Image (tube, rainbow, N blue to C red; front, side, top):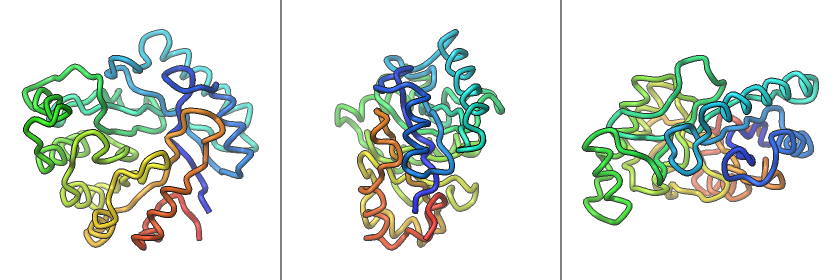
Length: 231
């Protein structure tokens, strides 16, 4: 049974529901924990920044209190890889959940960031370097999980899995689109990685609905390494 979903979006970015609607949806499917995890300021198109970000944080804090006896509500940001070990992760303590992944729509901070952008066009793909860029962020920041590995640019599973095991940062098996192959999941488990299953919901009706991810974890026999799943 899935006990939490800490990757959900709302109207504050490119979702269709309000934070409260996501919380109510999570309660409806029996979750113990839910996070509103919007795009961080570094995302050019969907990043939540400035006064809007503060309003979101305040709204989530109010929901924490309102539903405290029904579900744990968390405030999160889905942060962006902007360069080699460079990101828009906020100062520690600003949010409860810090997801990190590679997204389209960012301004590169260094030469690697430019190379990563070119990979979106199929130019100079480098899975090992991409994974190492994420690992450098893991070394520098307290990260809750790595969101949808290899969704937009390929990433070698070995460096990610080793860092997951060393730093306790789960790799996300995304409920909207599974981005790791069966072989990657198996290999990551062999190297000691842990996993987390989240919906990446962009509408309330998708919160906690992670059948694709659960099926992938079952096929690869890694469900025992999923941190938010209880047998």
